[in-house]
Amino acid sequence: MTFVQIIEYETSRADELEDAFDEWLAASEGKRTVVQELHTRDREKPGHYVDIVEFPSYEAAMRNNELPETQRVAERLRSLCDGEPRFVNLEVAREEPVRA
Picture 1 (cartoon, rainbow, N blue to C red):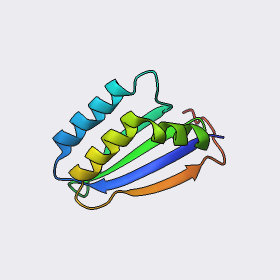
Picture 2: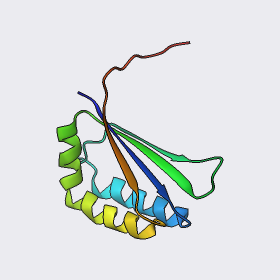
Picture 3: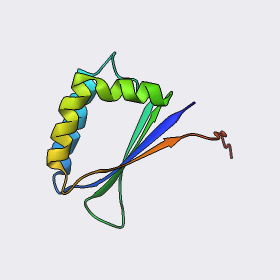
Picture 4: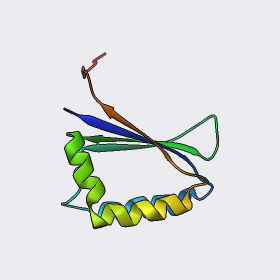
């Protein structure tokens, strides 16, 4: 069952965060279990970001979280946030492709 993690956070160091994401992408290539990631910026609230990360399953997400590359970059990301990130863990109950 598809699993989605939403990570909500505030930062005044967006450029450094982008560098950390790029570092993780390079370091975890061929190991990570992420299917898709959307890194979003709130248009109404500067400094507020929401990442939407899709995995094939909860188990795959846990394997991804246990990667040393993920652990290392997660610590760096936390240090760049203004406060603690908020995580929401969601199992996809229904998925429908919507076409115009």
